[in-house]
Image 1 (cartoon, rainbow, N blue to C red):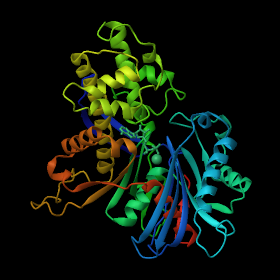
Image 2 (cartoon, protein in one colour):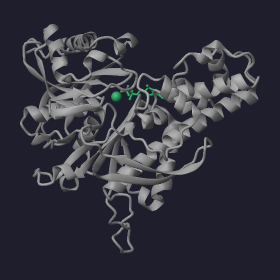
Image 3 (spheres, protein in one colour):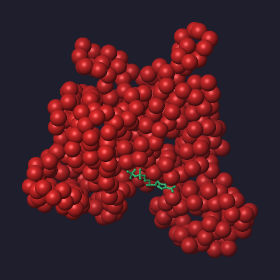
Image 4 (cartoon, protein in one colour):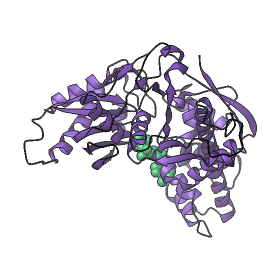
Length: 455
Ligand code: ADP
Ligand code: MG
């Protein structure tokens, strides 16, 4: 059993202590995919990206040379709340309708777009037992989804049935999660990309591992000698991870208690709600917010983008903080001193999250020997031998929340040291999770995917 270890001081006011993370690779959960894009993929390809707040349909035009994505179109729409707890048929019919509308808009002139059988990339970012490159069974829901009839079902098959119901002539050629899609795109553009990290509604990571370093793959021959390990790090847990009463209560009230512990401290779905819980307790135990507003007891009323807007309010009298407290939480007339305190709470919660995510990234680098612990140069002085290391990164929390991003960078430098950190590039790959799935679908239909192992 492989384990990776990150020693890291969790610098947070609630509470300060040192811990060690062990990111376990448990057997059944990790999809291990060996897909090698050779750059010859061509034509127009479609993908669907489902995995959190927003759902995306994408069309990617490939030019047939390495790194030649001629263009792409994306349409985003939020998943209606009621579909997250409805039936698999309702959810997939909604997705299939959106895709149909999108395909109908292609209008390539030569033929009716719907007549041609097409391969589809499907990014489905929930824990899946991968059965082949194009199929997998849903192990469990995360991020607020709870469609009971879907658990244990084959995901691509459910989508294909809905596509057929809507009259779409398409088949899933690649089923991946957002991290694998992002890594595929990152690697397509830049061969130094060794890992992909997603920090949006939820969080997860994957990385390239030498096949011979994976116990379950020993003896397996692959052309590149590498495989992608999907870590499902959102479910990482250790008793060394300091949890507050807010974390414990949030977990207990969630649809998936005792699950996704790391994700619940880091990702966009939860940060705003941690802040709401802290403010609620402050309101109950002191009179600084006046009478306790009933809105403070409404789960998820304070969304993370609102929390970010309060945190990043740079007006001298914190007008935005005052507005959100008044309009969203129905707490009027909060004095400036107390508004400053609210900003501090947002800061503490975000900083902790960003530092935990940085610890996870450092953990991956350590596991693959890119953290400089073997010496920058293998014993020699000059540091120009430390290999450039690119981590593809995606997700609304990282891309849209400046303070989160800055704290993450700061912590990564702190953990790795400045000298090593200058060789590590965090590269944003916008819509990478979906575009990467389209690439993998294209690659698979052109027979260039070598093999997939489901372990
Ligand atoms: P998903 O994870 O659903 O695929 P995204 O990667 O777009 O989607 O991330 C969306 C999440 O990012 C939202 O749920 C929210 O928590 C977070 N987010 C989006 N915009 C902001 C913002 N301005 N500030 C802070 N967090 C944000
Ligand atoms: Mg996503």
